[in-house]
Amino acid sequence: MTSWNGLIESRYRRWLPLPPGTPAVSLNEGGTPLLRSHHLSELTSCEVWLKVEGANPTGSFKDRGMTVAISGAAAQGATTVICASTGNTSASAAAYAARAGLASAVLVPKGHVVPGKLGQAVRHGARVIEISGTFDDCLRVARELAAHHPVALVNSVGNELRLSGQRTVAYEIADALGDAPDVHCLPVGNGGNITATWGGYLAYRDAGLTTRLPRMWGFQAEGAAPLVHGAPVADPRTDAGAIRIGNPATWDGAIAARDDSGGLIAAVSDEQIFAAYRELARRDGVFAEPASAAGVAGLLDRHARGLLEPGLRVVVTLSGNGLKDQAAALHDGRAAVGASASTAEVARALELTT
Ligand code: AN7
Image (cartoon, rainbow, N blue to C red; front, side, top):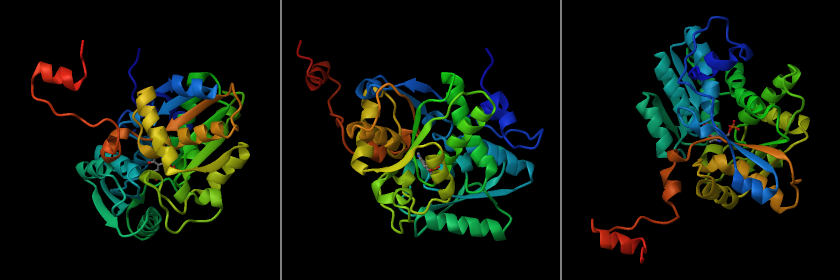
């Protein structure tokens, strides 16, 4: 058995538009677990699989695109990379930049990025700029800076290297299941991931490696659902901060993924998102961050409305790791109980009466 050396070296270089011989800047991303959810399968009468992207090195799916984007930027002689982010992209960009010996700058919406993600960017040495505005403002500024200064933009917008790396999630799923699933559910913010995941399924089908294509079911938070309403949202609102985005940069790609796959992009409430987040941790043992539970929330919503045919094979992307957001974790649930180091007292606290 050979060890896993990341998605470029271990498996997918030939699917990536890196110039031949480009050294891989890798943290051994990819190769994430695809877990059968017994709980969700039973509940929905479908075969439900969870793609646990929080198991990537910096704790989100962003590492798939970032290993390729930073490998490309480093090979082209970039010295500084820049991105706008709701948190996960900045953590990933900062880590891969550190790995490559590049400087990084990240622009984040002030007050809307959880400390776990900001802490990653800080520790990896990024210059963190907190902007008084939304993610959409951050992205506008980052794009303008990259157009006029010697800094390489590593957001997915128009970045074929980023998107090609993110396509590898579909390759892994098809490789593991032997074909594409019937339905692929995932959260949608800026639109890059649904575009790339769909692109991955298309590429594998076109190469004859799979026989079919899934329907792409994307889910946005109700207060930040521009793709559902068909118009940008100036003041996006949701407590699932990762997908608090009002004007997705990959708008057309997301709509094409929806329409070409015969799929949908629908809204779920924060209540549904946080309920799915709790149940994933409680029933499946998978700690995904709140935003990344939107795909499960959407699947359950469709099921509750009688819109999910039984017997389907469904894959759900869990895009980020729950460890990043401890405030959400400790917000409810069973609180810790204090006790002295006395066996009798702890037994009482645990209600171990016999
Ligand atoms: C956990 O980090 O946009 O639709 O700047 O962190 O491809 O944007 C994060 C997005 C879903 C949405 N789940 O994906 C950022 C950022 C998690 C995320 C999304 C994000 P896209």
